[in-house]
Length: 131
Image (cartoon, rainbow, N blue to C red):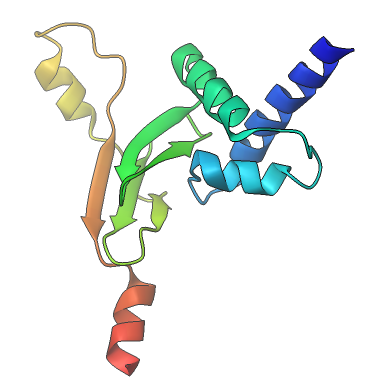
């Protein structure tokens, strides 16, 4: 029975991450799951995120404002990180340039490329203008 609980929690963590586009932290995922899985620990979330990341099921976007953020969408896509509110947005209309992969292919085998823009999002700009 304990193993079943373990897999339910693992599946819940992965489903939670894949069902959102907020690019959450481990803490955010933990908060979302506590109501349904009252005995889930933050350590369990971190441990499973590390496992998923190692297997290629998810990607880490690195740290945003000191907190590691994750993405359940492993398809190549571009991100925008707001330096004001720490929001992470998918830029669906911007493609990862294949030219970059071709330019570095002589160095070795490219497994992935992450392209991230940083700046202020439109919502933060609007809030500053109205303040």
